[in-house]
Image (tube, rainbow, N blue to C red; front, side, top):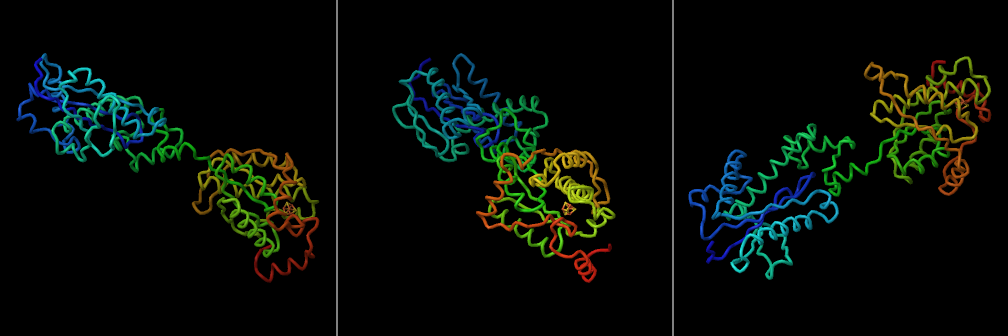
Length: 420
Ligand code: SF4
């Protein structure tokens, strides 16, 4: 070959922004001694402005030009995969893909014949293999036929590989998002287990999904008992507190304890949901058992009511994991509660608002919060943050309830709060 004219090398990249797989760079130069016909060159344009069919036709032609005895063009494609992108970041990975494609094309051409190296974009890269810094051209895909040609090769090469990956990951909806961060792709990523080995895990949206903690609905019976569970569970779960305790009387006491919940949620930065105060439900559940001793039958029914309602809430919210602070207090019967938790993790719960039974199986975290000095830590916490500690369990039948039962029932009737 007689190269007496200077070669200009052009570099372009494809696939910088998608959330998956590699970045692809293409270095290309036309042979100044054997240029393609001007009719063909006039067809070259920014690959994004060409139809897929047109892009593939031009790609085939460009490949053909490169394999003749006296080629009309030289090119090389280099791919840097998502592992390296995650390790060195996309800008450096893109530079590496460009550098490696450049190194390969320099092997094909007499280096004394090289005039200049030009890059599409404004990255301002330098390459140790070149004495001079490449010239950056913004928007070169549309303006310069060599960059158009390089971008066509890089993109068609990418599309061909992408269609192969579509066979490996058929439910990745490649045809919908081409691996970019579209709404469909975000929807797909809602399920953490669907992140593939070719996702760029350093990209914020993917990273956020990967680092997301599973949600857990935590039933709160009272704030002193909730402090340690919240602090401990927060490390592994996104905790959502659920307040459902219509067993607490009077209403003023119930509300007072609820506002302590809000205070602790603010301190601990966790969400909370307030359940209804359906005190009639409580009295109906413990009917005829009112005078059984504390921790015995009436309390079992009281736990049962609160756990059933929490299981219903978890199913309504689509939260699989749940637990309760009921077992923090040393006054509660742990085995009894573990049995109830097993029951409501499996047993259907009725959703009145939809008039249907919710059947999702739940996963209850059987943690004895009172262990490892849980009770002592909660006392320490409530003292430090000035959290109110009640001196009776909740209902008027609690051993240490401070009012006369009769007075309280009178008050309830006056306020029409219950039908007992
Ligand atoms: S004593 Fe406590 S656990 Fe037992 S029924 Fe009353 S509020 Fe519920």
